[in-house]
Image (cartoon, rainbow, N blue to C red):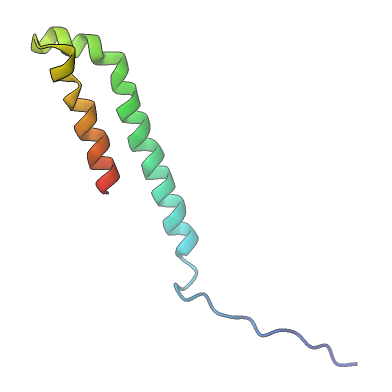
Length: 70
């Protein structure tokens, strides 16, 4: 009896697609964690810069926006 097997299709990206997805996930998690941890230093930033909380919040807002652009 001859076994029939379906032909194996080669990945169009050469098999590196999951490596790219995994590295982007790791990068996103790292950057998002760093931005979220800025909340710990928020009061210190307000005192250091001598500005209102609204003015200092631009630091995290710009950081999060830049992460979304990447």
